[in-house]
Amino acid sequence: MDPACGFRASEDNWRLVSKQDQNARRFRRLMAASKGELVLTFDEYQKAARSTAQYPGVGQNIYYPTLGLAGEAGEVAEKIKKLMRDNNGVLTPERREALKKELGDVLWYVAALCSELGLTMGEVAEHNVEKLRDRKERNALHGDGDNR
Ligand SMILES: [Mg+2]
Image 1 (cartoon, rainbow, N blue to C red):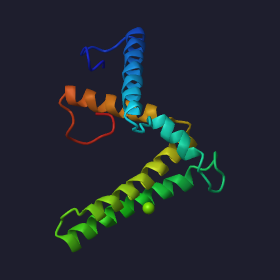
Image 2 (image 1 turned 60 degrees about the horizontal axis):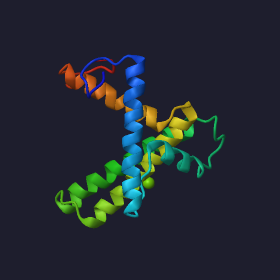
Image 3 (image 1 turned 45 degrees about the vertical axis):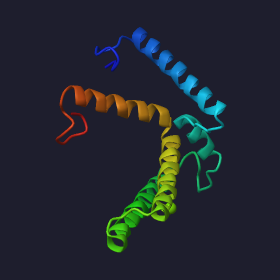
């Protein structure tokens, strides 16, 4: 579904929307760069993360990044648990910083698993946003099932 126009896009229309998105992204990146800010696309991040991958069988090992992803997600949950236990649920700047690092670890393993599966993070992100927009338009955000 083309969210801008509210109709299911034909292949040509989708290419046009994608081209407009690319131009918009390029513009935002130029503006950010002019302010000295670093802006990464998901695919750029995935490529950068891949350059740091060191585990057994890189390129043919879906198990290592899957286990790493579960482990890092657990570390995020653990830090949130301790925030509740030790800080009365108050998010201090230190705990926020620690969570930022753990979320970065989660992101790294998402990138690694995408690479092992032959997916780009960009296509995963776009597919996810499209799925959620479609569900929202059909008022189907609540409930169960992957294919609602
Ligand atoms: Mg970690």
